Length: 246
Image 1 (tube, rainbow, N blue to C red):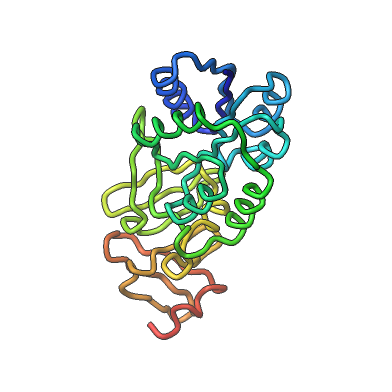
Image 2 (cartoon, rainbow, N blue to C red):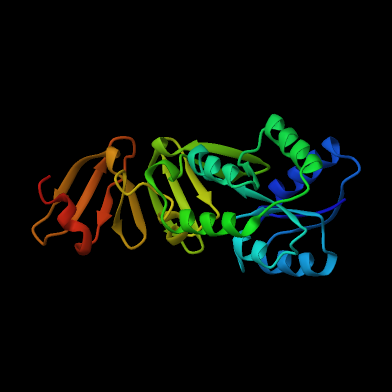
């Protein structure tokens, strides 16, 4: 049996490869790639029996890659979506791995792949695409996985004071840290609960539960005081109406 792993975070891809090798020694990992274009190419070239695909990758999404996969290739989606979305995927007869992947969950996935000979991916991919495009409240991010040196730090969304755009990355400001997330703010926005996280500037999204005061000056400019950060956060004129009553 041959498999391909595609994940844009190299350390997570390598961790999955290592753990699969331990759980399934006879499985041949023919390639580990880090973007959707490379994943589509290797699926076409090597025609693996299965593919572990991250959903959000540069170049092409895991869903786009899956659409071009050989019909005999069994697909395992790697996703950061929470249990409600994942349960919907499971009912549609394709497997998934929810990041961060536990040893027990990965072992169950391996058992399924060894036993299952048939899948029907088209309906599953359509449903995944719909859920990604229109997330419900239960599908919003609850955790961030942020690489710090050689480790991955899990940050609950409740601990985030605000997000700040940093070119192709996003600065994540918590009470006691400033961390760098390797996801553009534009991509992150669609995964956040807009009832809790408000965009207040083109490059700034604030946790509304952190806002304690809105300071209005004579020129109409607004700055926010947050519960757990010392600096004030500027609000652009386009979003000043959100704080008119404060």
